[in-house]
Length: 218
Image (cartoon, rainbow, N blue to C red; front, side, top):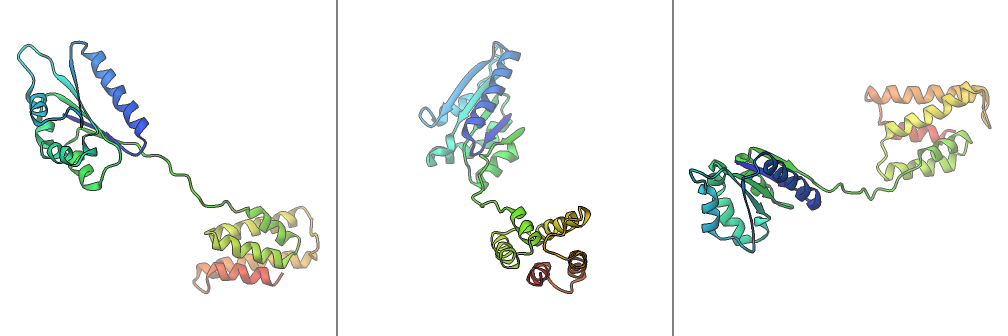
C-alpha cells in the first residue's frame, strides 16, 4: 500500500507525511518503522521491506524519503513501484518536485496521492482602477486615456475597466455630482457606455476600442 506526498512546498510535504506516520503508529503501537533515503538505499533493503512481514509481526511502516533525488536510486525505486504497491506493508513516499512521468507512475499505484506546492507570488503590478475612474470623473481626457492604455498594457480586462467607469458615471448621476460635466453630458456618457457594451456583445466592435473611443470623446 502506498501513500504518496510530494510537491514544491517541501516543509508541508514533510509535515503532512509525518502526521500520517504518527497517526498509524498511534493506532498500532507495536508496528515496525523503517526509513529509507538515498544514503542508505539498496535493493535488498527495499525487497526486505516489501515482503518483510512475518507470522508474528504486524505490518511495517516504511518511509521512502526523497529517493527520486538521485538518478540511479530513482530508476531502481520506480522499477519496484508495482511490488511496493502490492506489499502488505505501508509505504509512505515523500518527494519534492517531480517530473510528470514519475508522478504518474507512482500515482497509478498509490492508495492516496497528495500534492503541496508553494504559492507563487505574482509579479504583476496592481493597477489602480479608481485613478482611471477619477480621471474620467474630472473630465481629464488626456490622463484618463493614458491610464486606460496603461491598464490594458498591464493585462487588465476591458470588461472590468468598463464596469469601473460606468460605476463612476452612475454614482455621479445618483449623487447629482456633475463636476465639470453638464447634466446632459453625464447622462449621454452613461448611455454611450451602455451602448458600446451591448454592441461589443453583438460582435459589432471590440469592447477595448469602444471604451477607448468614449474616453477620447470626453
